[in-house]
Image 1 (cartoon, helix red, strand yellow):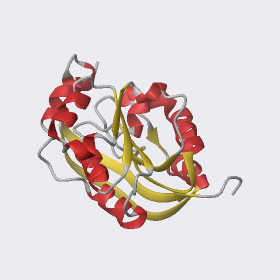
Image 2 (tube, rainbow, N blue to C red; image 1 turned 30 degrees about the horizontal axis):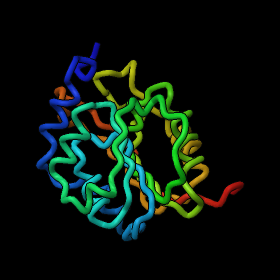
Image 3 (tube, rainbow, N blue to C red; image 1 turned 45 degrees about the horizontal axis):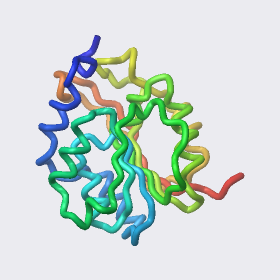
Length: 203
């Protein structure tokens, strides 16, 4: 059993993330997608809600999904009332997602790999919900990533990453491969970070 399988582990992790700045990927995403003007967005695996709050401040109406039951109440306590009114929280293991409303934006930073073997099906659910011209930002673990919970986390070959991205127009892509430190200890990172736009159906 990995560290994140321990009871309350995700809650402890998320609590320690509340004061960090938004990750760069959401900044790149918003440079392309712009203000939401009330349009629907998804923050998948929202955790501490730092990026959710940024999307709300930019006018998006956000469905935030996370399996941590403490994540939603913690985020709602920190939001201005106007932003909280445009937030819907769903407490759910996102690996079990089977249907989503129509979306103009999907933000899935550091979350999709934790769908494990269900990642291809979850990706299909996301693509079915994301409208043509809608925006996507996600991180995908490469095959050389040494995630502690390796048996439970999806790590993709370069070819598998390319297959996933066939239905989107990639406007920003970075591949990180470096030794470093994760929350659970030493880590070799191999991560594909992507911002893309949904192609018309059939392309």
